[in-house]
Amino acid sequence: MLESKQPTLIEQAINHIPGFAEINQKLKRKVKLNSLSRSTYYNYARCIAKVSLHFEQTPLELTLEEIEDYLLLQKRSWQPSESYFKHTVYGLRFLFRMYDRNADSLKLPIIQRSKKLPVILSTLECKALFRAPKMIKHRVMLSLIYSAGLRMCELKNLRKSDIDTQRMTIHIRQSKYNKDRYVLLSTLILKGIEKYLEEVQPKVWLFNGRSKGSPISSKGVQWATKQARKKAGIKKHATVHTLRHSYATHALEMGMDIESLRKNLGHATIQTTMVYLHIANLNSVNAFSPFDKLYAAD
Image: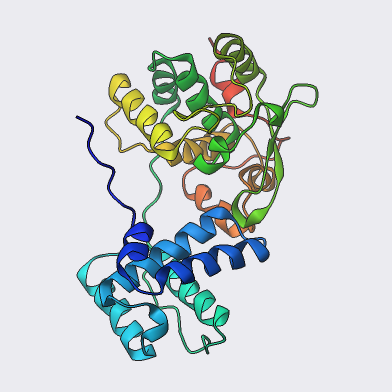
């Protein structure tokens, strides 16, 4: 017997909080009109739903003091990420402005930034990870994330048509900050992609999901990464994003200059990219994919 699917926070709020369904529809429409990303809608909606479920009423019925007390309670009861507070406060501001309420007085709480450096896989660990999956789909998928330094959402949204074999580029569409960019397509990865396309023959999306006509889900990518990590015997707490961190670090260590790396990663400012200076040394050369050099000595 199949287990019933648990309702999401948004679904719970729609079902149990009077007025939330209307707010949710208006939020979805406003986000689209403002050309914001789908992830922005989900981040805002989830946080607004959580506030609503906590108070058993929508935020529109709360005072500023009640909202600030809620944020303080959340901060004291667990250690939230900086992005969680940003999504909550920015989401509430967006909501208030939708209904012509004063949102300027709602301040973003000060959060201690984490000083931890990201987990990085060694080149040997990367090779072991890429060999581990049985399915060619998962081998190519994990290798592609690393070879181009992709975010998980960027990988999920890739279409077959985004792989340009003439210009040897990958078209990343509407990623973070709603920006498009091109990244380099590794010559070695292209061979893997061509073999994968010949065997699997996806129609639209480069990596299909379980449902017909849908791209692979975040859970699908995370599951493949976790299984590969276990099979490869990697003890580090490596996630999908670890491959992006490893790409950036190895690229710098192999000679890519930091401005080329910033553009490849799609960072808005160089300051974000400079965290990798604490891990790798810099040399100024033309941009390339570290995936090609990974196997150059074999």
